[in-house]
Image (cartoon, rainbow, N blue to C red; front, top):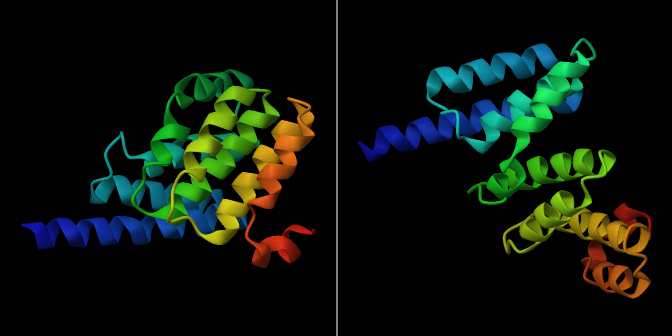
Length: 168
């Protein structure tokens, strides 16, 4: 039985990777197809990746009505926090960074900051995700809290190999 479960998990990871690539390229139809395939394979409604796609697809779809967006935001709930706990660090980073960016655009600063802090507590993040989380937190510290010292301290934590990518 564990082998079957392992195969299902691997297949789900592959399907969600296809969905992430589709979102990255702006192919919402392919992202919808990947979400449907993940549900068919067994992604339950509490899976953070499934919830992310069910949020992001309508969020990015220009045809989505304002009342649907309001409903999406009301259902967002604990998704950023849940995503920080995903076993796959790349998926966790992608989801949390995307959602934190949206939360910041909506002036939901505390929620964004909490998600970024939780993500930053992971020891297995990819360097670029860790750097992006620190830069976003530094931006919050400087722009919202007007705490330049904290912002500089956060930026000092960015791995030096990321400096050129981030435009230091």
